[in-house]
Image 1 (cartoon, rainbow, N blue to C red):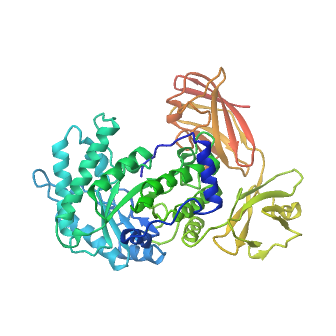
Image 2 (cartoon, rainbow, N blue to C red):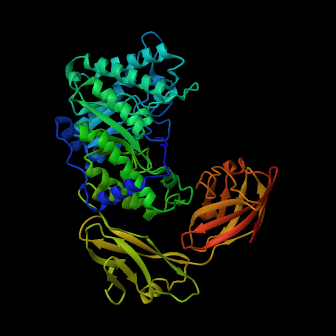
Image 3 (cartoon, rainbow, N blue to C red):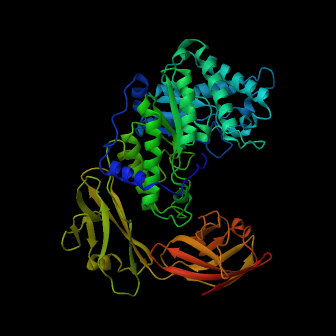
Length: 565
């Protein structure tokens, strides 16, 4: 998985079209032209990635921390409702020298074993050439003949090994292809090299016998990016090959500022939503509408850890709900990127069941969400009625409950259209413990889709304390007082934004700062100080309750002094 390019400006007309499509699903688009390959792709939905296993860079599939793949894992993925599996494979350390570039027999047999387990589980299966893309294929400009010979040798051996496998197995030419190692930046040169690889891959597989004459082949845009220039280049390659069994693929990790929480994009806002609609309108128009089916071979968000709060839980769920239903309208298959952070590969449980429930519900319809999943009550102040806006998405609220006890309409809450108001009396009752933090969870059930959960949070204004440290180790003692950090701004007292990405005052969550709730600290990372000049900087910490706390740091060489406001 890699970051994708992001755009910060959209034409007003694009926004209008996207919003119309969101309100009237599919209104602006005819159904996807049906073909055998389009039906094949739709039958693959939903899909899952077996990431960071056979694609791990090293001597063994456990090199990146995941356990050895088991048949039980594959069977459990199928039992979750998945219809397809992408098995990324990195071949680099398992290939002999020139001129044969022989793949280790044991490794090729291991890949075949895992593929067969997936086929036996009735899954559609995709295998590829994965991290080889940046390990050595990226050197193609300066080492053209060597890279092409090695690439061709790998695909000759893979094609021969699997030529008698059923057509539920598909081949992907290369993952996120890139050719920048050595200084290549010219887009046209990179596209020419990718076209050469894809055409060579196509010819090798099609001429290798057996089922490979008609096997579905998956071709990626440059870096798997869904920019129009790169999709057009891939469309031209596919048109030139003139083969009805070719599928296009792109990857998607969301609007970059939201996906990593930078530039103040803490919420699933209109710009983040518009990035989805604009991107996949373009994907649809470039490929699907012209009879070329599309697989979104990887999707997700870059800031997944809900415990450190890179992306707040409710905002994350809204992203996945909207994304899933929108691309479903466009008849594309999706394959969730999972490097081990989602589905536990030994216990076979989901790390975030609410996320999985939201994803699973999207396979058959839409779920309802809300403007927030947080209800804040400030300690020591008069509790007030609190309203949120429901995004019903065509559904109806059935009930609200706490620990299995149903709340009473009119007494505990009111619903006026899409405005849900929690009564002060009920919020007071739920926070009588006086314990700071989440005191209760209100579960909203609807006639369709996943539940939505509201966390009732008792908090007080967070308190930061003065401290000293160094640019390599600086942490602000923090009493979070039940609150959670949303983002941080950094500006020089004399003017100008401080730290990396100085086009914005809002810094990137986790890479430049991160809360350590259990330690009672906010840590400023070395990466932040690497791009901070000596002098005085004002930090502004934004919390999810709406509280904003100022703090001052003074950097002098490697010494940092922090002063509470």
